[in-house]
Length: 342
Image 1 (tube, one colour):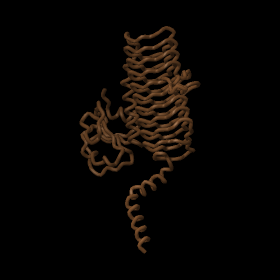
Image 2 (cartoon, one colour):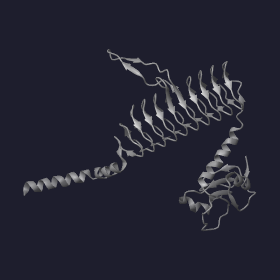
Image 3 (cartoon, helix red, strand yellow):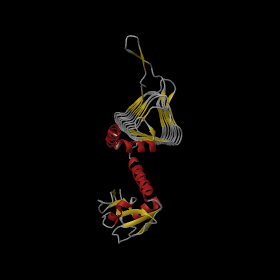
Image 4 (cartoon, helix red, strand yellow):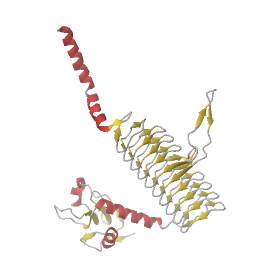
């Protein structure tokens, strides 16, 4: 696919400086882009490459002042990073338009409702009672179990498994290897030291505009629903246990683990490898630093860090003392010796 500078400027509402007819067909990083590629400049650490890049088109901020002559066509916009993201999104949508129809190798059960312009890939399995909304794409080797409802404009990538009676809203993206609705980790200890499995009869509810990363797992509830509210973004390799509720527009980085029945508010940010115990509440607008262990509830608008977690500023001060601990011990011993000898 090829685009002219004038077409790109139309898409991102930009102003052209240079040749409006120049063509690009690929994207490239500004420091290594070649002719026929498009790039952008948002981080001023990379400004020097603007004057040497071979990119045919570079998107820059409208208020950026050139310090040298450039050899590329520029498109000026209010925010180059946002504009570039919009362009990538447009490019991806064009690519996805080729996914139409039901592959002859797909296995579709009876009593399935499939909307308009739906794609179902080879070896995908869609069981009885499933409903799929308009313009949704289900890639090959996915399994969609009984009674599941999937909204419109969703993308379910390869090898995703969605268990029975899951509910998925509109514009949801689920990446390869994710498992939605597997059994919650529920076992009752018995007198002989063994464990009796507790049936998990609930489901998973995922609202609109959620994205779930590769190989992440969301367990269905013991009863009721495990809930992911709209706009939440979940990275790869995240474990969300049964009956967890996650608020709107929360961001969860890779390798986080959230234990059962914990409630997380809206606009929360969880860094990589955060571990959260069960049956606690985390408020709105909370930030939790990477590798933090959260063992008790956290109120609104807090930032925590460390294992176990405590106030981020207090942790940084304490850690500064910790690095000097050996020196402090030596000084303390010297003082004790002086006192004994005085």
